Amino acid sequence: MPTSALLSPTHVSRWAAAPTILMALANVPAGFQPDNFDMPAGVLWFFTAVGVAGLVAAAALLLRHAAGPPAVAGIGAINVIGGLAALLGGDASGAVGLVLGLAAIGLLVVPAWWRTRSRSVAAGA
Image (cartoon, rainbow, N blue to C red; front, side, top):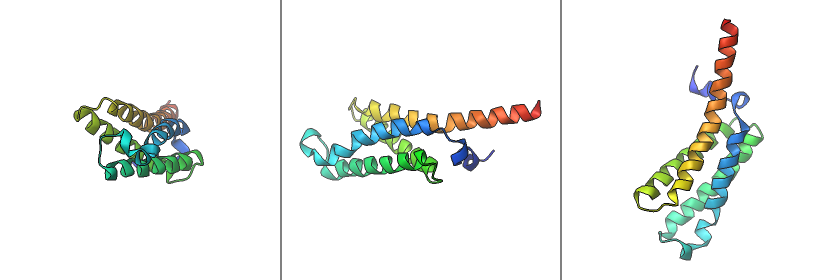
């Protein structure tokens, strides 16, 4: 089955919105608190933009909009990459982005795969 069918709004678990919202809420304030972070302001504002995009993606997923699943997967991937980069840079807080990003992707794809697999097994029986 093509990936696009796995990520269609009818096969997606809306639970993937939960870690996306949590990560978005953690990212949004970054640009407004430059003194609390040892990073360039441009990077902090990028995190803020990713946080806002995460809230929009989660809302699209919850409202079953066709753009919701790919948007949540994209935000999850950005959080995984950012979490890995932070961990490799020696910042232990990157584990939060890594875990929540993987959780969002996992909660998005695994239930869709499981439902598709269950239907194909039932049809073959």
